[in-house]
Image (cartoon, rainbow over all chains, first blue to last red; front, side, top):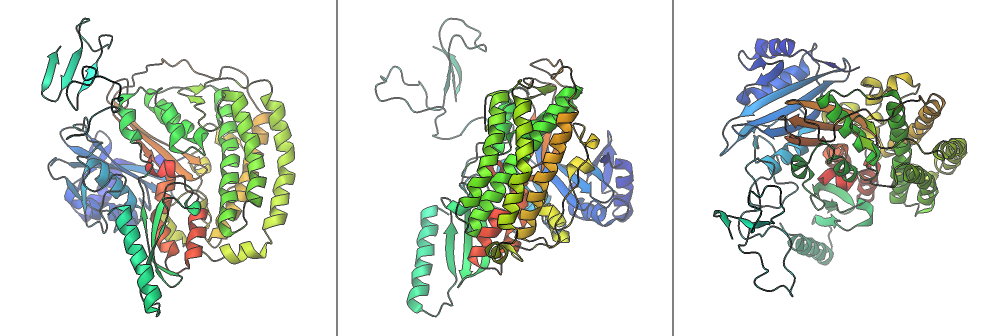
Length: 199
Length: 386
């Protein structure tokens, strides 16, 4: 059975090499963002932790900051360690890349860059992976609500539809009277880019 | 950046190389997005010096459906059908991994009968998926469709069993948080018995047909080799990792659904080449049949679904559950903020991460070898792009 590697033991291993690079909060190991690559390399090479396998790398948008989550696995000792790093700059989030430590981080970091916009410094080929260059925004961020610009939500109207039936504002989402969120049973509530208005 | 530009550049390269005639110009060839060897809308841009691959770059995203974003707006139960469509050739394994992650978050205890049924369907899915993987791999090696359709015959019988149990063949949506959706129908166990009785002979036939086959050896032996150290460092998993000789199987290393109660071996390869990946999959089918035999003999009675509210709201927290899917380590990372829908839903896709070392495996070989290597990794594009 895979055991959870003790976060305090991991913290001691990291801090012995780079003092202050790691701390434990609520049983989770947090790394100082600038020290991520070195600290993870220490954990990989240490005899005790032996975390040679990068099982998973992803990010979570915690609204005030991004949290990059690493799941590291030891195959011989069969334990798993969850490591996190906080990225507080939402305008230009950046974190050192793990590609020098784990070759398997290449694609996973590209995916996080594509969908969260977190730059991994030192990544040899950091490009968008699923979405095309120039795609507006980073969809897995919590403040990404709909396609900005001219792209209209929903399907285009049918040709036989009259002008009155067309959606009132490009980019708006009509909420019908029977919609559970609608506070007013009569009349359509229209949410537009400018704000809410009743018609 | 656009396909048209790349195609034009590639054509220019071809024309220049042909007209200069000295063959010194590297030629860019696009494999895909519509190419029979890429098993889906996957594009591999290879730079060739003559027949030798100098560089291989993959372009993906043609099947991106933003499932991770969509899942943040649906309840935990409503997300189960999404997992079918992540890896549509192993829907049961995906259902299972997601349900395990949700159960960890909710603290649900799964009844023993449900666990046995889950193991049964996960292993049937492995038989079906490996039949597909090995069949198409041999197809890529040049045995045009004959072995593939022999293996499809077995896969078809597995899909029939899925259909009689849950009504669907590919996108099964069978597992639930806390168990499985339906109990086994009366006709399933006799069908499964017949399947288990027939399979050893079928596998013996495939082995007689393929293992000594000179062409398969020539096409797959020593091709796409990767060392165990590089495979671990590249986060490879599943048959691709085990073919290098690393006996890493989550069913043994971190048993779930009561796998610790079943006797089975973890087949490993020696050389880490395409042929070993084929052999490992072939051997895993036999081990799956062994597990299925034990499940059928020890099927417990009782409920098949725990009492879980349909709109469960887990406590704030997170969970990471992994299963050994036919393609490798399949994980789901869920974060809850206490609401009815996951705050974050992430799938660790073995198909994508197993491609990490594709470039290293292909460089230095011929273009035809690159196609065999890609086939031996056994990708599902739905899982790469999600």
